[in-house]
Length: 147
Image 1 (cartoon, rainbow, N blue to C red):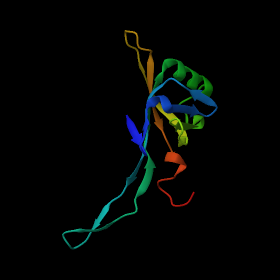
Image 2 (cartoon, rainbow, N blue to C red; image 1 turned 60 degrees about the horizontal axis):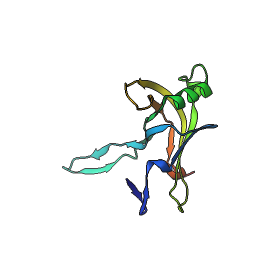
Image 3 (spheres, one colour; image 1 turned 180 degrees about the horizontal axis):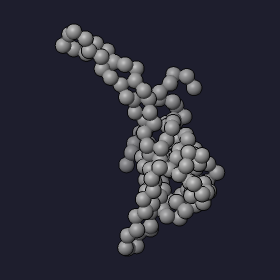
Image 4 (cartoon, rainbow, N blue to C red; image 1 turned 90 degrees about the horizontal axis):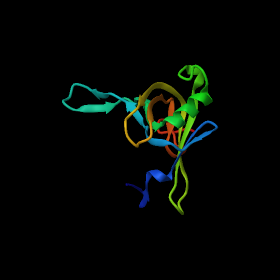
């Protein structure tokens, strides 16, 4: 169980929104940011500094029930993997009595979908890889000091 500011969040606190859709069948979602940077050396045996680097939102991995996947691609329509079908994604979570936290994933594009059909009582799931152009945890841009 994750603990954020001494509050025990669990997955039941999460709500996922894709544009006008609210999707309740999410099984897992993973997203984040990174910076590509280089250390700068000189004539000494130690690094001198580092380049500011280039910030990136990492691709997101999203696993959902088949029914949510079908609702999402119906909402996006034909060509749902094309550049013109990008959409915003919000991940909101809160614990009773705590402020709502919303992470924003902007200009998301489905770049891969994988159907996981298994025998048994578990619901059918689809894993989707999203290209994310900007990831704002709590609405904060990690790569810029300006809004």
